Length: 455
Image (tube, rainbow, N blue to C red; front, side):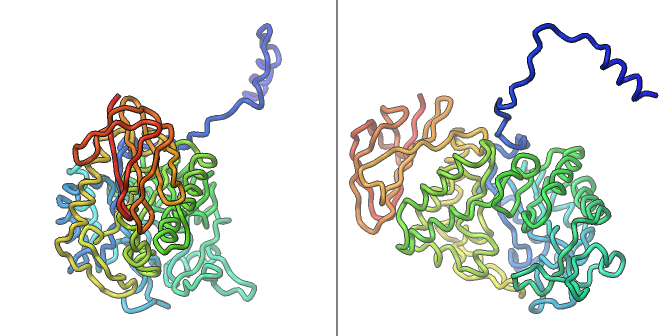
């Protein structure tokens, strides 16, 4: 009956004079998902809880929160906190990405109360916490294997399937064609937000899970509170409906190639060109010199980036992108942390600690360097030696930062082309320089010069 009344009202509704259909070619918004306001200047710190402290517990990690706050980080990313599978386990302790129970805490790390205390302590410092979430697969001995065998992918023989083409023999893939699985997975994620207070998730291999699942989960979680989502993937379109941030792997790969002499600054142009031309204008791309995967399997940042590392640190905090710090970088950790065994970080005083804190403080003082969409786009400043010297300006609402970097083992003297906001600039050491088209400057090998000005 209601449908009939609605149909009738539409049939006899008056038509406005001169009404024209909407232009089908009018552009839709390409900014992407709306981010929580607290992510505007966010810097991420990844905690490998097992290796973060000698105890390897959440209680011990909680004691480090004031130190991390003083360093300037904003988002604390905890690697998976769930119980780890025992069947087909790798190594002695197993991979935290082999999840046996999505609604429990690994006893080796502590209790749910310990996690809640960690979250509360972070919130008291004005920080936020995201959990690493493994939605693509479970451990072989997860309870769903017996309770809901249809929730898993099976091969032509009817056997469980590890993720194809990877050596992930300690896990089996889930089948997202099952509505029951989707409902239970979403409910588990909502539990940690609603009952424990976490502020979002880092989604492991997010691109291996159907986009429509993430779309619905984001809507459900936002009904509890505004969350922030980081996806381990390189698909731009998920930024439109579900993810705030995604991985900028090509950024790290470019700096690695440059440091090894396998590429020049063109590798960086490639990343930033695609980021500006093809990705949503509000997409937050996480950039990093290290993380748990890079450190364990590819090498430390010292191994991978070599002489380019100081420039990489400068670029991490001045270019477009959400910076990530992997635990131990502030102590100059120079070892590959074991992944399946206990291998605590050796904490020591190191210049990186002050360096990272100084860069974060500089970034926080300059709103042109804020995360997307609040910060400024990078504008290339052409120079006379563009294959070796990378230069750009970020300028917005009266604040501007100019970065000039030498990616070679020799001193370089370059002449700058046209740039936004020419005039008197202050270098980070306080010296001033009149910078405009035709200005010449010299850079030491593998060095960065950063200037700032207000206008």
